[in-house]
Image (cartoon, rainbow, N blue to C red):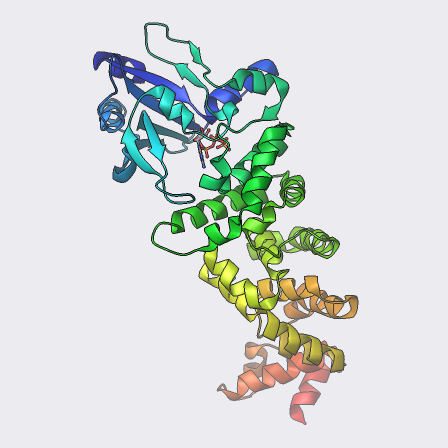
Length: 425
Ligand code: ATP
């Protein structure tokens, strides 16, 4: 239907980007493919299509498929059609753009947009394997447009960048390249690796971390790429490759994946397996917090803000150092579980996990014991029991229940009779 609508208007329509790459990879592996994201590009037949062509086509399609939701992104002249998941269909996201080229007024800034043809549209993309297009309109529907050797690179299993200065223009492409390499088991082509190292050595952090009206988009993209990587099953290998390339410096110049951080991330996985079902921890976010927490305290808040993490993550990272000092000092003096509970219940789960990861075994054990056992202990009697025993309801209940909880935790009372005797005293 989309091709028909484009043909009626004298336009060409192309399937571009990841969907073409994944189709070709699935074909080579004789595998099946589930595509949930489709990128389409509209181009003029004899001359460039009008800049609003993508939006016009999306509107025409929405009239044919009213169940799809239409979103228009004015500044970039793109439109998206969204089909939500229902019983028969998985969700589907179709982006429709007008063929365009992007020029960068200066490195690491937000791309600006002007209308242009399909070749130029593909030319502005990141890697050859992502710069393939499949023509959907006649004549020559089904033709593969491969201007930059993407097909050969798919066969050679390598990630090759299109331009020497690509990573200087947009350092998040380093993360994208690593993600594709690890995900498909591809190598980073040697020249591409040189360009990556060059971009990193030329002060990548200063550009990503600079805050001005043009750069927030870059930081958001870096966070998005980190999210993609840290929620993928291959996140460990991706992080290792980023470190080998020196690319963790995009997060902060002092950031590296040393053996301490590797150990902490391993501990975190154990902890996530244990807590995740009940506590709604977000694994990729916890991994990122653990990575940032590995920086010296003075950098953590700034890096978390630069990456535009959620306010609660920023808080954890900013408060971590002070909380850690208090907890380590107090826990090494405390003997009784009730003291530990009283201290640790002031802190939320995420911060306690981060502190446990960074602490020596005795402290870590106490925090785990608190999180897995002590935090769930209830006083032997509850408010109803107190009422039945004839105690007058009121604010004193809180204190009585707290006292009972402390005695229960410390093993001083083990049954309701002992609890009643304790209260009577
Ligand atoms: P995935 O399967 O992981 O979604 P994808 O290739 O579809 O992979 P998208 O992030 O959806 O990735 O991007 C769609 C296309 O847009 C890419 O294939 C690439 O051609 C282009 N693209 C995306 N981000 C960039 C970028 N930072 N620089 C240049 N081109 C990009």
